[in-house]
Length: 178
Image (cartoon, rainbow, N blue to C red):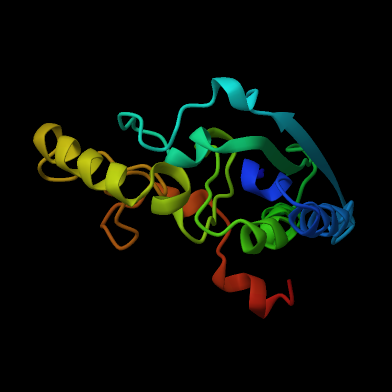
């Protein structure tokens, strides 16, 4: 899966609307022989959306200005899928979301429906200010940074005993022509 929060500002003028329509029309329905499923979810009516100046939370402030949550997903049969097919699925959803990332700089993504290779996990999942506060809290409860989650708060990709080796390697995508 990969997701992106689409800010209300992408709907506020014909030019922004046309750019959004173009980016959505560019979403592929298949890459590398995989069917990709885009989903468009209404976040909340703007009358109920909190202003960006509201008290902080542990999630990205992009939720406060978003109108849509767009998800692209691919699926495979875990019994029959080869490592190459799984790697292709991860690469396909990553590539499919790129036009929306470019159209919505500074926006975010929903971490539970996010790209494992999100290029800006700090900004996309928490926002820089929120992330700093979360690092402080994590430092209090896990001062040795033992508890780690792939692209989570305090994640160190170079730490010993990595648990995220089960993910396909983004460095293989270029080698494999993805």
